[in-house]
Amino acid sequence: MIEFKIHKKLHGSSGIMNLDIDLKIKEGEFLALSGKSGAGKTTLLRVLAGLEDVSGDIKVHDKIWLDDKKSLAVQKREIGFVFQDYALFENMSVEKNLLFVRDDKELANKLLSLTELSELKSRLPNTLSGGQKQRVSLCRAFMSRPKLLLMDEPLSALDLDMRTKLQQEILSLHKEFKTTTIMVSHDPSEIYRLASRVVVLENGKIINDGVPKDVLLNTSENQKLFFECELLEIKKVDVNYIATIAIGHQLSEIIISEDEAKNLQIGQTVQVSTKTLSHIVT
Image (cartoon, rainbow, N blue to C red; front, top):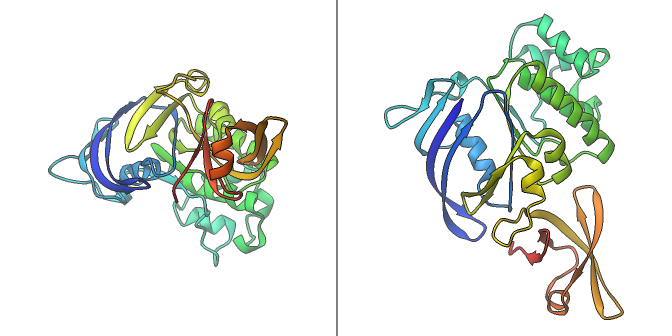
């Protein structure tokens, strides 16, 4: 069981806000964090990793990571962290990137085999594709056999086919190593495929918490799940205004009001829910 009750003042997209989280996560759970940009999702990961100062308590599998007396050092927290930008050592081969974390060739070979990278173990990162680099990053995160795996939108820069492939590999590794996983994602299909539970944040607080099917399909006025997208086009069709938007690697068309059509600009970031389109001030 992972238990944390934390407080931290943040400068969010709408000004100063308080990150105020009280959450319990079962061992082996796959938790997705979603919500608006600036809601506190990445900060929450960094707090768990020990990369951000915070007030409160964190207990992981009966071991105190944070209380009013101490904060456990990052290197002692037994976590794996998968970044969006890979963060590989460019002067080391694929295999050496893994062995740098833990000198265990048997484990390295197992991970490389599971992710179909065995034939590339002698290659340098700059000779790999984006998908291959992300697989190396995943393998490296598992080299420490982490109790807790943290992932910050690890697949957002990849094409749809590669995203789908790596989603399956992430799930396989999660089950193989019985790791508790927390992932930040704005992609509803990714959340649905991978997560056993999704927590939605807004202004530093939890506004929804449940199984993906219930949360993703929740259309109540006060508990919407928002997704960031790019506004590509607005056109008038008869009496309606149609907005073309890109959500991740997929395009969609939605009806907007005349006032929204006048105030929105092509290329800007917007947020969509099951009912509305709203402008993000950036």
